[in-house]
Amino acid sequence: MEDLEFRKAGEEDVPLILYYIRKLAEYEGLADEVVATEESLTHWLFERKGAEVIFPMKNGKEIGFALYFHNFSTFLGRSGIYIEDLYIEPEHRGRGYGTALIRKIASVAAEEGCGRVEWWCLDSNGPSVEYYLSLGAERMGKWTVYRLEGKTLERMAQGSTMTERG
Image (tube, one colour):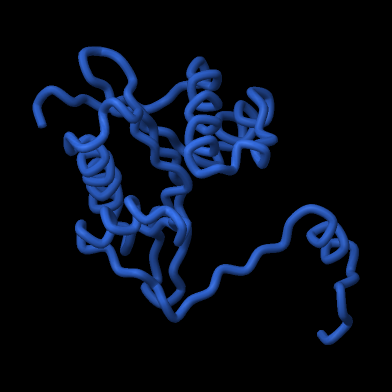
C-alpha cells in the first residue's frame, strides 16, 4: 500500500488525538463516556509516556489513528502490545488502511521482540468483529474482562470492597 504512510504522534498532536478518541466513541455509541482532555492526554501520553499513537497518512493527511501501549505476559515472559483504540475515517474504510495500520503495529511488536498484539472489541460491533476474525485474530472466549473504576476503584484503593469476601 504505497500511498499510505505512518507517523508517530508528538505532543503537538494532542488536539487531533482527542478528536479521534471522540470520533471512535461516537462510532461506538459511547460519546458520553469520554472524559479525556487535552491536558490529561498531554500528561499521560507525553509526560508519563503511558502510550503511543500512530497516524496513518494519505497524501500527507491523517485518516485515522491507533493508540497502543506495552503490556506484559508472564506466561510468555515478555512484553506485548495492547491496542486501546484503532479508528479509520469512514470515507477511507474498506480500502485496506485498517489492515495496514494493524500490520504497522504488528511490525513494531516484531521489531521489539513482543510476544503478541491484543485488543478488545465490543461484541455489538459486528462489522469490526467480522473484520478482525478475517485477519486471523482469535476471539478469547474463555476470558472475561473485569474492571475497577470510579468510586469502586477509590474504595478498593482505600482498603474497602463492595463485599468483604477477600
